[in-house]
Length: 511
Image: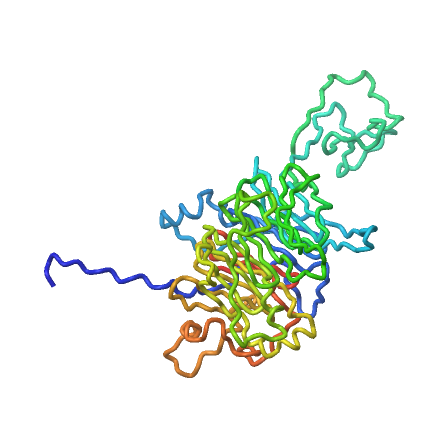
């Protein structure tokens, strides 16, 4: 080799498979504890910073969690990493507050019960230290503001009512009568000290004006607006626009555009309802705004197609700008083909270049610049294909699993049965396909290592066909449980950290 020759750098290969570890769990069940229906988590969402996490449940409650490990040193985690500061702690969250978002209602015109279950939660832009979010049940969307409020109390009174309440009696110091929140009074007459109280002989030496002081702060959730009476069918999606001013809500047949500041009117931008309902062939299953282009949104259908529409084209977007669908393989059609093709969830990648979709059997990654077919397909639970008849009988085939992408776009994740979830690498050349269980030991359900010691567990995952696992049984030979399903999960926007909901428990993992 000549002295002037340069050595070509080896091409960087696909990222290595992540080693997932348990972080924490909220609402963990004890052995034999029965789960209450109202406590089952039905929605989960990180905010854009990843410092807050929200969950909604079937009882209509929204629970907020806040990150704690970023506040320990007062220096952002990224800056500490740049300074080679040793960071041994994994992402940690703590309970922040909760509030009742929706109550059960009854539609008397349609004789229909409207359950309080939270279908979706979406974070909005923060302002003045307050958190804002949208939550929806089947019919009504609500805009919530959560902020710390200082509780004001009156102090420095001329008389201490805790010691003088009439008849010379001494009141308990644990229940002062005059230290009232927000300047309120115990009764309408403002007679704090009792009717028979008499001033001491000689009067008071001086008169002091009361002072209002702020002694403590409470988190208060307040419903700012209610967006109601705009959907005839169940709302399946809510999505914020990148303009920070508008959002969409979608039901089976229509998508409406709202302004956050206006709750009494919305614009119908997509309507797939036919003139004759007998001609109905597909319904809308999910909808989401593009993360950076405020004029673009995508929605999926029960026929397995994704349509991208441009709001600049017309007021009613009956025609789509792009259509993404995979042609059916010849000879593969069966009774279940259309059912399992229905897309239950779509998500844009953070840069808006890709769309991730989840149908019953697979995850598909689509490039918005290539509508000929998906750029990658991941088999989530192919072992269920022989069991589709049983799953149809017990209605499990209609379960709606969500999906998510990592912030760097290198990995995707979705849930399955037996409280399992799958993580796939989607970078070029990646063969990562990991199965994890929502428990304190997430790697418990991994495929067993064969007798040859030279091959590690991670190398087995790479050899296995994308998503193909031991059919129908776990590593211990136990049959999969189709009653425990992991429908909801979310990926932290900037780190490899996943939050997932298993019944009423919220599990968090990091890599």
